[in-house]
Amino acid sequence: MIENRTAGIAIRRAGTEALAEALAASRRDTLAAFESFERNLESLVVPRCVELNPPLWELGHIGWFQEWWIARNPQRALGARADPEAPRTAGIRRDADRLYDSAKVAHETRWNLPLPDADEIRADLHAQLEGTLALLQRADETDAGLYFFRLALFHEDMHHEAASYMAHALGFEIDESTHPAPLAEGCREIGFGTGRWRLGFEGPGFAFDNECRSHEIRLPEYCIDDRVVRWAEYLPFAEDGGYEHEHWWSGSGRAWLRAQGRCAPRYLERTSRGWRRWSNGRWSELDPALPACHLTLHEALAWCNWAGRRLPSEAEWERAAIEAGDAFRWADVWEWTSSAFAPYPGFTAHPYRAYSSPWFDGRPVLRGASFATSPRMRNPRYRNFFDAGRDDIYAGFRSCSLAPTHRATHRRAESLVDTFSIGDHVSWNSEAGRVSGRIIRVHHADFDYKGHRRRASKDDPQYEIKSDKTDHVAAHKEGALTKIGR
Ligand SMILES: [Fe+2]
Image 1 (cartoon, protein in one colour):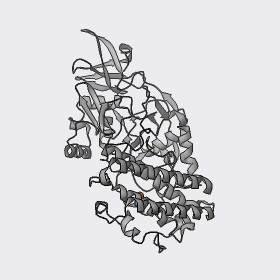
Image 2: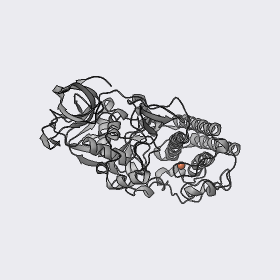
Image 3: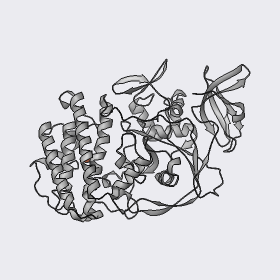
């Protein structure tokens, strides 16, 4: 984690030597990903759908992007102040702009283009990288002088992750060594007092336009989980009828649920022997310690309603990731936040206009990174943004308590720990003897239970537990419960 975090921060300030190495490494990854598509797909054909791109098009587009912004860009030395409309010099392939400009070539038309074959595109990529590296050697070692080299690197790295989740949807893995890691059982809350936070980033080094301008905001007191939700915490919601009971879902969530007809998360299936996960083209037993993944924002919000939690805002997430250091684990999966993707005050679009501005349309921000994100892209200031209904990407979430009741005397991070968490397997005494079940909710405030008001607070929570043997749901304080393992 520390290494990854450092890589994502250091590369934004990388000089010519480190950038040249990174550009060459990223290109090796691009070619390896493409070879995986060649091995696994007959004639490189993929279904025509919004989640996919033809692999040949992706390959050509990556080389085109680099050449368009570097070798063919007469204003490349101006960095973020360059005029994107400045006429371009000729490229390696004459008709490249009509084939590969993602801002102009509509997604659904990419299946019909007269693309060169794989070997021709590989030759183009080789020549384009040679040209880029030659220009990099002569570039000014300033943030402006290196801006487009860094941008092209990040762009190529982003396409690697897209290749990974496209391959996953198609039933194979590009890199079988890249997997989500199981997470330890205990989940702690990290508390923050009311305070000011400087949101965003504007250098020194590279910054994406949507991270600028950095500006101070005031954050209320809050408590945020130190890691993302695992399947062990998420699936009790599905088992509790979460996908059938519409009252947990937002209006747009209900519309999504009806349109999809879902009764479980994508790539998961419930059988008489438990949950199974579809990965690498086959079904296998699900490890409940894995981070919950391939979830939409709608599912994250519905779970929060059910569990009596909420999503963090992007500012809460950013502050926790930077201030809490290693106590705040991230980069397991992208994390949905409650914030809409919107320009920060003083936003000015950078030359790659199609990157941010077209997407300030109310879609949510995701923060963090996933297990498949290049370490170079893992940065606590980075803002990702996808449609709320996307579940092909490696996205999950973490949650915050609804009303932190701890005293905000601490300016720095501290931990608040519940004895038990959602998903824990516990036993207790009942009239019928010792029974067991799984915790499905934690109450930190008074709540109604079977027609009675039950007392609960942050210091003295109550737990709802679903019996292993019946559909009965019990509510107990921690003194009545004994943990019996997973
Ligand atoms: Fe792209």
